Length: 519
Figure 1 (cartoon, rainbow, N blue to C red):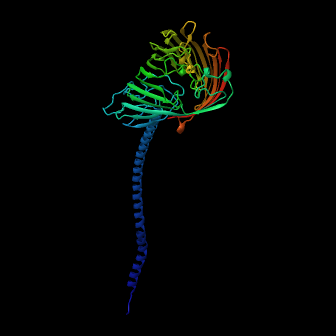
Figure 2: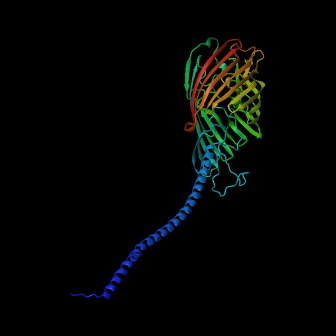
């Protein structure tokens, strides 16, 4: 095929080629620019979405912060409530709840149930919102509504025990106890396994060195309490220190209201509040404290308190073997005390009248009576020198009622028969003790102290009649804390001696160890 080109055709063709060469780079550039624009748009779109998500996250963070604050507040409230419940200050027990209480260091004397409610303004008790509301109760400070009774340093604390509440919260049952292992070692005849009583210290031919031991669990205790809201409580407590071996013995048994007590408890004429902590329950001697059946009224105003009671009591007497005599008091003993206390300590004075009366048969088989009115006085004080030291002391005088003294509880020291007059006469006695309690640490305490006792014996009494004596002791008590709270370990060293009317004397040393757990 033949193609013919003229100059005009060649010129046109050249113009087309040049135009194509010029326009192609621009076309290529236009193709390359489209993806960049698209990517830019995508980036801007994603940036917008990220900004929206960031705002959303900020809003969620604010909500989380608010929830965290609420959780912190709730946790703080729960912690405060748990601390208050642990301290026994308040707590709501559900219907029929069984509560295992923990012991704390404070010891109160009695009680079972306390209703603790506060009005809206905090000034008084508020009424329940409905009939099914269970009252707020406190078992750690039992019977707040009752006036405190006297307590011995080794008594089981009121807040210890198993508490069972009724469905309506108006009744509560408490069961408590203490397992106690006591070991004593004496360098003389072991005349008493529990306490070192001055008039029982061996003398004369019996004053022979003979180290011996006695281990016993008989000082263990078990008790039961029943309370009807804030109206009255019933209590029964026992140990195994009965007269015949391991016999169960009534220690306390009474019923009481806020101001009245009927039953067996510490007499109002006692020194238990002024006894230092010791293994020997009669402590540094001259201790007054029996638990007669009684009717007692308790009152007080501010820092002042008082007790007035009628004690059932029959005097113990020393008589010739040929005389058939029986104690026949026709009236109870009249007893009372007045106390003033505060953060510094406690001071008390007490008095007692005893209408002693003995009925006996004379040699001519005629029954007659002999009467001699007795009396007693005491004064006791305990002073907190500082947070680690407390001084305790008391002095007492008895006439015809020495059996109120714990050291005289195993003899006949109230009255004695005068063969010359044919009458029973009161015996007079006096005693005093002084002790210091020092706390080395919150769980470690030492007592050091001593006491003196004297009996105004009659000239017609036998030569072996008790005249005077002394006792001194030092000990160390360790009370565990934490999960083992309630466990106590103690060791004690005692010295005691007595002198009889004819001048015979004797002394003894006792080492004691005690381990017990209050539950």
